Length: 389
Image (tube, rainbow, N blue to C red):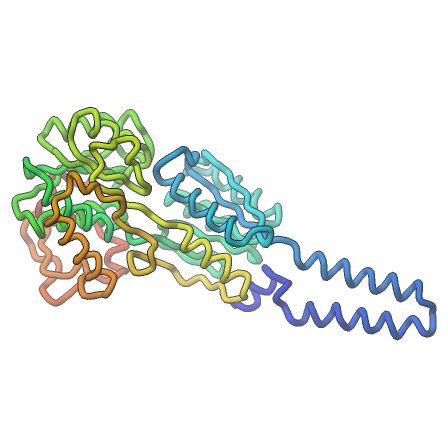
């Protein structure tokens, strides 16, 4: 399946196509002896034109929920796309469509991009999944990739980064830094991705500060600066002196700066919005995967196996640590824990892990599998908050 599809996507790598062009040229040369050089030249020109057409750049289209701006989720994806453009140059042709809602309107966008001949179409937000998958079924010769989803089809694959790893590291730093033992989490949409990050942040904090607790305020949106600001203010009012978010704007960081508490950048570095507030940034390096994706398509090795990369692959990290605000002890512990995750010596979701009620969910010596993480719907001990019904 993957070889047949990949050859349709990248005919420059199809040996039979190259062979056909060569045979046509040779046939034209032989034909010249009987019907004249002018006819043979025309045939050779036709073969050359076909060969030139097969070297056209690979079209790759990215559908964004928002606009790149200068921080956040879409900004991080845009940096990855720019990395790919710089690496592959004129071998690819990139199209971007911004501000596409996670609704039936997105289906029209995906369909238009596939109809225009893009060989790779990428949906960069969770809510695009079903609409993109529907279009994929109508364009079997196009590769469709979807960020953070969980469904699969012959020409439809998902990819993600293990943000919970950087969230755990942020929690560790927060546990060392807090004075109130109250941490705040601005939650976006109550899906397993966000639940994982809340749990990981909480466990990271309590691994070094058992008295730390995490309060959660939901805004039920990925991007809503006004509600993000209100949520951050509410958490600060409840005593939180370190904030983290799973939302797309810089409102939480800006609020932390104004209220003189600490916070973490999310998706990208947000230091310029909170130079005193930011302790570090949970950054996603999407260019690592986008380069891999283009290379797979060009080398006929693409397949629909889900990809979930993390610290080990340099797909995520806790970066730009504020060394004036983060203690040397925290920095040392952070470095060691990062190395342990990369080497496989430590898994944030290894037991024993109890839920909010104290019931044991993961026994000592066991770990949650990726399949279990992808459907996680409960909070660990130390989280003050509930999942919306």
